[in-house]
Amino acid sequence: MDYDLMNEQLAALTENVPYPIANLANAASLLYQTLPGINWAGFYLLQGKKLTLGPFMGKPACVEIPLGKGVCGTAAAEGRTVTVTDVHAFPGHIACDCASNSEIVVPLFVNGALYGVLDIDSPLIGRFTEFDREKLEAFARILCAAVEKDKSIKVKK
Image 1 (cartoon, rainbow, N blue to C red):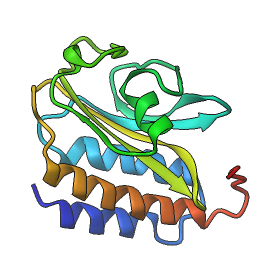
Image 2: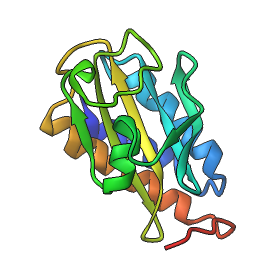
Image 3: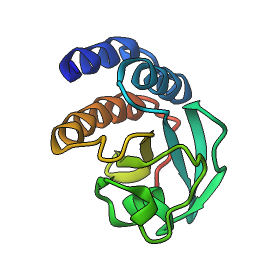
Image 4: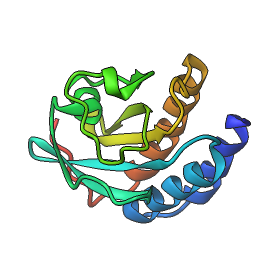
């Protein structure tokens, strides 16, 4: 997997594009089409004290996730990437797709505040490694830099 190339492609896709939803949609598609062994890639965006479904690729998903609940809510509440080898062993896992067995969730920060999370699921147990985490965090930073260019975004700190 050439993460560096994928991240370069994301930078090119988002360059001079001032529309966050369009950037998130293209990012979800890029991940879904590029990463092997995944069955869902997308975003949940912070709305008050919950995460709300944003652009994604894959089967239909849960619409709202409370902060601190499931893998996405935990990553958002703790402000750190959460990698889960086997989601069935994760306390409070929210099963939107029963085919998912492992997951990685990267928090997104815009202007220094939580904006949402990048969520990627896999049908493979143990799909996500430390290397994946590092490269997906770099992907998230590129995307967040693009979102920050939209001056209409009001993020509470």
